[in-house]
Amino acid sequence: MTGTIPDILAAELRMKFDYTRSVGPTIGRFLTGLRAGRIVGVRGSDGRVLVPPAEFDPGTSARLTEFVDVADVGTVQTWSWVRDSLPGQPFDRPFAWALIKLDGADTGLLHAVDVASPDDIHTGLRVRARWAAERTGAIGDIACFEPGEISTAPAESEPGEPVTGIVTPIDLRYKHTAAPQETVFLRAIAEGRLLGARAADGKVYFPPRGADPRTGEPTDDYVDLADTGIVTTFCIVNVPFQGQRIKPPYVAAYVLLDGADIPFLHLVLGCEPSEVRMGLRVKAAWKPRAEWTYDGLDNVAHFEPTGEPDAEYETFAHHL
Image 1 (cartoon, rainbow, N blue to C red):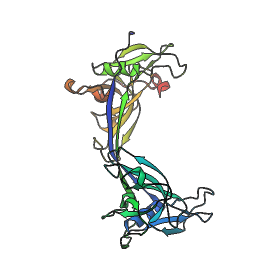
Image 2: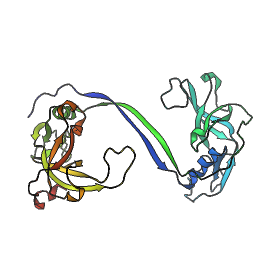
Image 3: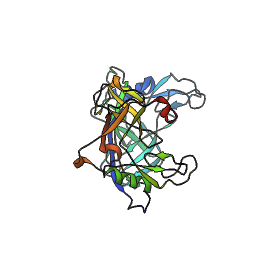
Image 4: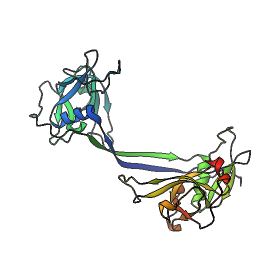
């Protein structure tokens, strides 16, 4: 089908999750120090003290292992004023971000400075750390910096077990504006249709790409596709992770819809993971119509076996 493109879709989106990562021995040493009320740097190959510590020298790439304690008082090197703070930032009022060279260090540490106005901060300003009342082994153990020459560091505590990992909350809000071809595709999905686009040589891309990736020619000849297809390749997910909606094991597979020339990734359920195989015939399991939205292929809950004979390998080998 061809025709005029409807109004472009746009939506406010939010991506929110906890990002969990290991920190390694060097940053782990830095975070363990913060929890104990100390700031730790490392000495580079040229004698400079780097804060935060780096695992390898930025100039020579040599591994760095000589850790050095530095002061929690330092000098503002450069700064930027935050007039309108954002959720997740250190303050819900105006403040400054600054690079601060701590006494005993040779590089700047980025952190917040709590001042009332941009008139109260300048390059060369002496500042001191304001430590959090409760420290957990994170950069937030320094609540912020404030003007001052005298350290107010808490009495050092025992370092305890080394910090080996951190959890960083991610909360990203953004507005996504769909491309014209994506808009056509999303409107079709909201109607319960799977729509592809045909290139000049007849190959059908799903979802539509707007242009043939080989030639750059527009692909605005839209094609309604069946919601059946075959599994080309797949993997069995056995590892649990935070926020997982399905209990492992389960299958993520590339499905080649009947009439399409490129497979796409989706879930294959409705059978034991061990029963999924290349060439397996599958069909879309749609969510209840009342739950259909413009959220792309989320309207299809998963794919499941049709019970038909498997496709011969030769029929999809060039689509892998």
